[in-house]
Image 1 (tube, rainbow, N blue to C red):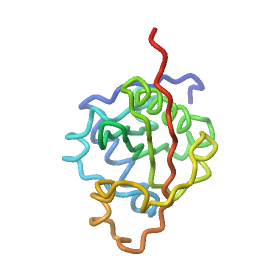
Image 2 (tube, rainbow, N blue to C red):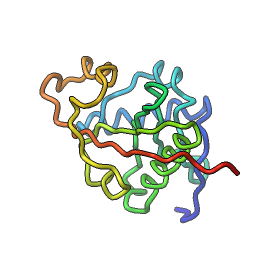
Image 3 (tube, rainbow, N blue to C red):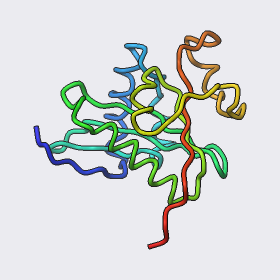
Image 4 (cartoon, rainbow, N blue to C red):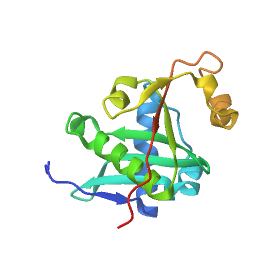
Length: 160
C-alpha cells in the first residue's frame, strides 16, 4: 500500500467502485445507500483516491444552494482508515467550496468527532434549510434519525 496518494475528480470508470464502497458502509448502517444512477448523476460532486488503480476512498461536495453545500459519502476502505485520507478528502471538499464562494458546509454523520477535528461544530438539524432533508425520507431510520448535523463556516479563498 502506497503512502503517497493524490486526490482526483471522479471519472465514469470510478462510479461502480464508489457505489460498491458506499453500499458496503450503508449495509453497516454508517451512511445512506446511493443507487448507481444517482452516483452517475452526481459524479461531478465526487473526489477520489486511488492506490495502484484501485479506488480506496471517496467523498462528495454537493451544492444545495448559493451559500450552502453538503459533504456526503465520505468512504474509506478499512485498510486505508487512520491514514488521514478521509480528512484530506474533506479538506479538499472545503477548499472547493471556498473557491465556489460557498459560506456554509454541513454534513449529517454518525461520526461527528471526525468532522469536529476538522473544525466543524455540532448543529441543530432543525436550523438547516428544509431542502437538506430531501434524502431523509428514503432513509430506513426516518423519522428516528441517529445522525448528527455538523456545520462549518468558511471564508472565501484568496484570489491567486
